[in-house]
Structures are given as structure tokens and as C-alpha cells.
Image 1 (cartoon, each protein chain N blue to C red):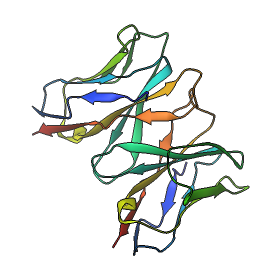
Image 2: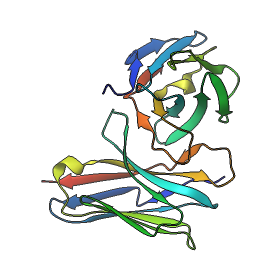
Image 3: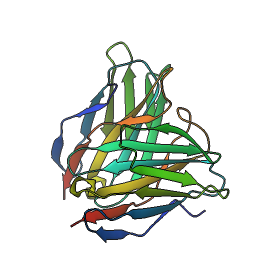
Length: 112
Length: 114
């Protein structure tokens, strides 16, 4: 199946450091989205990158997309304790069933 | 602008019972999506409704069903509950069909089966 897989599964860093999370997927996509989930809460949309885009920025977030490698990365710069959460990538299959497929997420812990 | 609201927050049932979960989308959103988030399994797509119609369904048995009302709110019904149905059920809404629009999520209903 065409599922995003995040790597690493868990990441622990100190406040102020950068955090990089990766996502790989299997089939051609229309776009790729990143979401954040705080413990026990719903998901919050962070950024959407289209298949014809290579890089996108939003505040301290930087997302890259390499369609030739079927991979994406999410970089959070100057991390804060409030960034502690799980991060998910979600993809939709081009010409597919028009549903988002989520990976299992990367659990990020930012230590103060 | 009010976000996606789900009720109840928590629901405790026993095996064999039936559960009804409710979702109100963001005003103006016509698409509603349901996901199951079981421990360690990530989000699994359940159902997608748009304009009152079921548009797509995930790989779940028929005892998972739902509907969307004329005001675009939605219900998820789970019949003949099993222990493995214990999970966080998330509802999301969007203003258009995937793939072009982000989905906005509620905080979920945590369903526990005893």
C-alpha cells in the first residue's frame, strides 16, 4: 500500500537544537502534508507541499520534497519545549482514491 | 471560527454493544473524514463523507458505518463492539476534496471497550 513512513520513530533533543524528521512513501502523489499531534489531542496541519514543489517554509518549519526518491523531510529550527509532539506525514495517491494515508509518526521530545 | 468538535470526549462500552460518535465540522466545510488511531498503529482511514454522500471507505468491516446530515455534521456508528475497537477516533473536515485542502481535526473520542 502507499503509506508514508516516518523516520526516526522517536527523537529526543535539547531546546535550541534543530530537529529533522523524514518521510518516505511508495507511489506517485499529488501532495504531501505534515501534521503535529500533541498528546491526547487532534492533529494540527503544519504545511502542505505539492508534488511540483521542492521546498517550502513556514516560520521555523522547512519542508523538502524529493519525488524522485519518494521522500520528504521536516526540519524544525531552534526547537522549543512546546514543539514536543508527534509529527506525521500524510500523502494522497495521484489518481487514487482521494484519501490521505498517514504514517505512524515521529515522536519528538524537546528537553528544556 | 469554531473548530471541529467531537462528542463525547470519552466513551466506555462493553463487548457486543453499539457506539455512536458525533462530529461537527468547521462552518462551511462540506467534507468530513473519520480515522481510527489505535495505540502504535498510526491513523487508519475509516470513512469520507462529502455533501451527504459516502465517497470512500477504508479497510474496515461493515459494522463500522456512518452518515452525514444536511448540516454536514456526521455520525460514526460501530456495532458489535470488539476489544480491538478500543482507540481514539478522530474526525476531520475540509472545504474541498483531497488532495488540495488540508484537513482540520477535532480532539477525538476515546472509545474504550471493556
